[in-house]
Length: 191
Image (cartoon, rainbow, N blue to C red; front, side, top):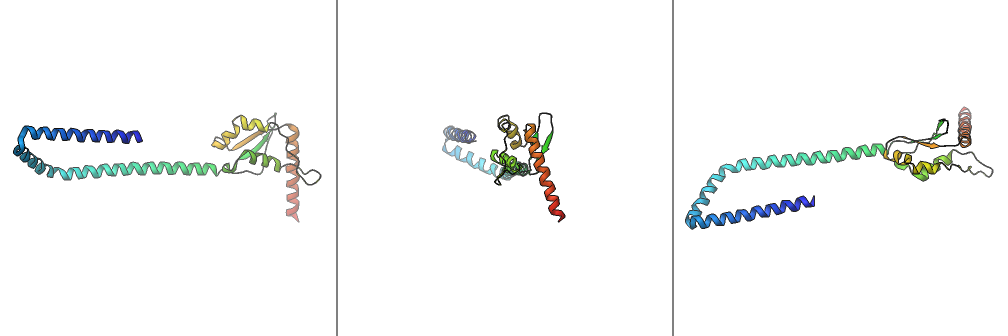
């Protein structure tokens, strides 16, 4: 944009210099009295063009205002689309080698999704171990999710589900824990 402005300024300066040289040359050719009468004639004729010039200027201003409004609306629409995309919940699913899939019940918003959030969600659905702590989610395949582009695709909005490869034993532990929690929830509601 700065190059365009600089080029426009140079063109305006060049046109001004050319007009000055042309006026001086005309003055030298016509002499002082002839030049004065010529200028008076140009001014009297130019008065009839003033309304046209005003109309042209108003038309150009309206065109530029429309283009500015158009650009503002495009920016606003892009920002709204980005906000909508970032407010979309993302499902996290465990997938085994034989394509069994378990979608976890917690779905963070895309704007909140991070590596630590994914690890935290996976850790949320682990059973308790003696001492009241949650069992550590042992998933070496999690690093593959982050390095393969799957995580980036979810962040970019290409997909709304993050599929995490999972060994059968981890899949079984998480599915059993989810089933146990669901039974506990239903028992609590039944009281």
